[in-house]
Structures are given as structure tokens and as C-alpha cells.
Amino acid sequence: MWDFIAVYGRGAVWNDHPPKAIYQGGPVVRVKQPARAALAQALLGVEHLK
View 1 (cartoon, helix red, strand yellow):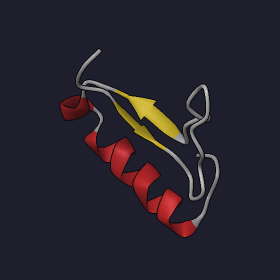
View 2: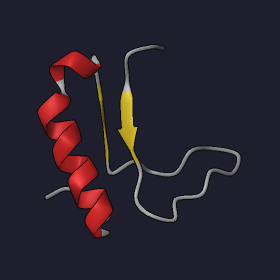
View 3: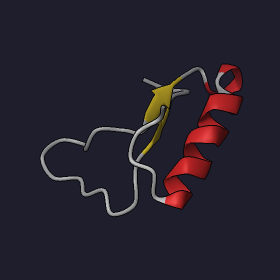
View 4: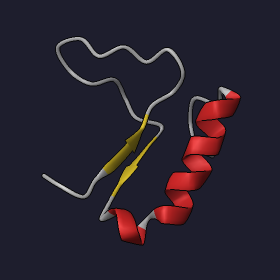
């Protein structure tokens, strides 16, 4: 898979499988705004998008 974005919360730890993403989507060129919003929320420590 290519051209996909996933945003994880602070302290997310990858073990055998990736943790649940705050946001995921693609292709990246089509999801820039929601991805930016998810990044802003992740930086604020918000775990889930509303």
C-alpha cells in the first residue's frame, strides 16, 4: 500500500501490530485537511477525533 497516512497519539507503541490510529486515510493529496486536523489534535494530546 502506498500514499496512505495514519496519525497516532502521543506515546503510541507499536508491538506486533500498529496501535489504533487517531486518523487514517488516503490518498494523501485528497485528505490533507483532515490529516492536518488530526495532527493538530495529536499534538494537543487528544486521543480520538470528534
